Image (cartoon, rainbow over all chains, first blue to last red):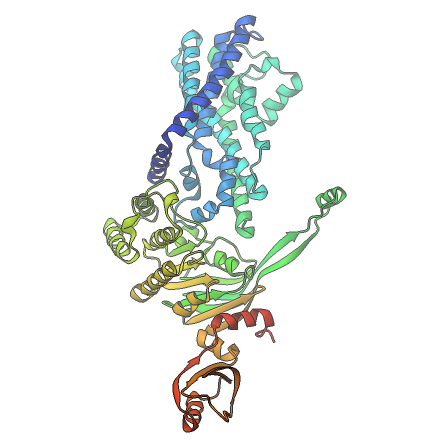
Length: 265
Length: 326
């Protein structure tokens, strides 16, 4: 952990050498998020909600995933497919393997996409606004569960980044296909499940458990009934789903590294 | 220190075809062959030795080095370095070795060089006293002061190599692996790197294994050379043995006081003659003293010198003519 801190601080000092580029990066990603959310809010203010969800309720859903995804995206930047492809191509992965320190910590410490800060701050802002305007949430017996949901989402997305990095070991090129699951999954989670057709919803509840991570916990926090009549403990599967996803990803990662050590690049 | 027995590394090479039907066929049927990058190699290296590992591109040098440093797992064979099987206990093992891969840097690109070194101190858990005494020493030997505050990206190739050597040695490794340490450097920079490597080997008893294309590296640094081609170890021994076995003829260049007449030497042939200078070629076993005394008996000689064949030429002859496999 000490090492992780040292590596990150070094990364920050390095990034600060390009101050203008850093500021522009933060500004542009913030702008993207603001526009995204602006368009989103504009549509909903017209329709006064969607599938029985009011704007502030959707903001709860949207802000929670935006924050969790932004934070994970920032921390897992070293595993993000394009970054990791560079590690393989430029031989930095070999350099990491030649150092007596945990490999994953070194990769975590190799890169921190600070430009995501705009997205994270905005996520917190939207989520905070939503919490204030949804009094149903203000209950201690509900709030203790919030960190677990956020960690569950973090583990889920983190696992996806890890899988993306592992695939890169074989392809060496960055794999855009993973964005379908990371960014696509995040987009999907920003809306209530009721708007999707049944087969999609089933797919994203049981096969790719994105509904378990955001939608069901949101039902619990907002005190909304489950329109699909699934068991009452569904909202509490979020940390488990995230944990399982991450564990599977970790196994796949270890398998990938074994392959790397037997073939090189 | 290093024990290698029957080491092999084979790669599966998949054949790819260009036309679109073949793409489908590739997908359905694995069409591959085996490349023996390292093929049944055995050697051992003692503590404090400095060994040059030679071979043309694609001979298997890097593959061997990657196995020795634990980056690659061998297909078969035994490999033990400093009591470790490199790829099995990675973290413990790499703490005891240093490695410099000539075309890659271990420094943080955007950080001042000194900060990279400080990060390595954390990674290798180097005690502060040791860190500063090493830094002092390397600063002097490698003239680091002029660029210690500059980020790695702005260093010249020679400066970067010096910084990387320093980075690889801060934790007092028992073994140092150098892959092409002088590649791309000018003569002065090369010389400086060589002197430094030599000093580390002598003062600290560090075992050093270096791969290189540059024969002068080997000539100046190594008493022992290993040569590999097509994955096979072709030669392992003293550099002078390599010369003796495959070096062919030596040359005697003589400047006469006046144009010589009736010039004839047993055991030597004239290969060129220009004005007063005559070059003889003679077999390796022939004693130079005999040739000289025979010459001075009948002729007035102003100057003479004996030339060893260039080692580079020898090596080239070996690669091209497969002298060793014969």
